[in-house]
Image (cartoon, rainbow, N blue to C red; front, side, top):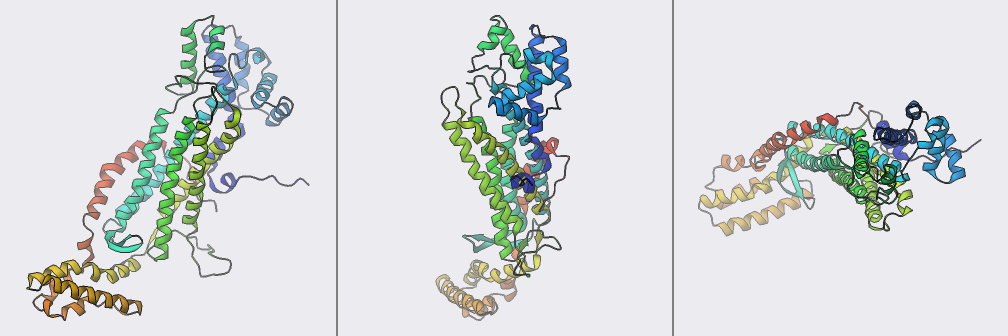
Length: 478
């Protein structure tokens, strides 16, 4: 019995079927064949004597490559592109003399990579559309819900839950803008020949530079690219890969921040990620509800952020017109980067849709912190009633520290009662003191900031992303 082969968890466990299929060998074989067909059709249209039967046979075998037959050729030839050419020629014998005419291997490998990366970016834009929509709903729902803000993970002033969500939202919105830029400006490699000089195509067209330029333009247009790289070596500059991975890794940065914040908030009992009814938190501790989705967001994000470095090194270490040390690395990094970004966004949208905001706990934490936050306003009231500012400040400092010690022993936060009994507060109306404990007085413009940001930034961005909205609705697999 043959032992099962290893398969990447990115494909089998985390990423969506749609993203996995984009990078599959069958689709790649189909793209290569379409690239060869577009090359031959355009060469024929521009005057080369390529028979119609050759074009017809190529068109008839775009999606029926026998990958096992290709592997047989590759074992013999030790060259993946030539293996595919031999097999395509077997299936389309009339085209065999004209397959790959004037081209180098990078005509199919590089152009196909750019097509797949563009499709991956567009799928990710659809995932961002779903995530931003889910976060917008949470921000709207909790725009005015006061919560304790933290700096250094220490209680600071108040904010609102909705304002905190907009901070996550803004990060992902910046990622969407970056990815829209990549999609808009991703070029085709085009028909550049062996070292990028187009010498082979110039030879085929009897030195007619106009037809060589037109070949490059028409083949790019056949795959819906508005532009080809103006110059290349044998490969397109690998800085393009680095730019794409920068955008994908940006998604990972945002997701890691989102996941980390959720882990902290779940520890505080304030905001929980969704959990299934039968979900098990621990094999040993049945009571546990771990933030496993947020932790997975952080884990996958760390992997994707690290992948970005590979493309930077690859771009930095290419020799002259080309070297092959990029090949094996790119076969790993490009699909893994896309699958990781897809898995992250599917998971993040699932978490965002199902956030469990525990208003009771949030309210109790706010109530516990409020007396401390009201001290500055109480100080002003006492001074207006005739108290000495420095004396009042010292009273507040001493009582605040005593209350902190009492809270540590499980006591109440009775700072207001302690201060009201002090002489400087004798002339202050008790109702005025207590009114300063209303949390909504301390959130500043947070509710308005949420409303403005959603209206002025998120709404228009979602409109721009709407054409990318995916037809699939992937859920978290495990």
